[in-house]
Length: 229
Image (cartoon, rainbow, N blue to C red; front, top):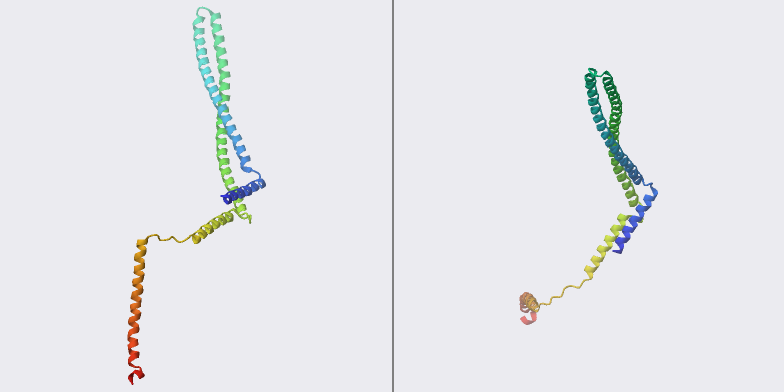
């Protein structure tokens, strides 16, 4: 356990050192992307406000058109009985039409801003997608460089350290296996059969040896010259 902990500390120290050697581009890029996301959020809020303004202007235009038409009708009717009253109706009709032109100009400008924001928002979204993809790719490439640097660092190579730990583990297990005592058979009943079988095997072997030796002995006795005399 201590060796594993030491290995992790070694690897972390190497990575921290390599990070110190590199400017933390990933963090800086993350901040830039966050700023762009905030900009996108503000753009969406402003776009929503413009949409509400467009709706209000369109409503005002409809009301002014209705008002101008109403004063036009009243002017025609009033002229038959009171020309001054009819002229006042005309004056109010003209004022409604002038206000309508002003609101129409404001509506057009707001619609243009809204359309431009839609274009800007699409551009921001595309840029965010591109930058997020680049950030992930660049981070992976930099991490690979850092890992390769760690593997090539020599004495504290984390792969070699890990292999040494497992080698020592295997040696400890092998040593324990070799020094472990053999299990002792404590079954007397089985031992008695084994002893009888061993004794029988020895007797059979003795009989075979005796049988082989007996003919040779007889032959020697018959050919002995002294016995022949």
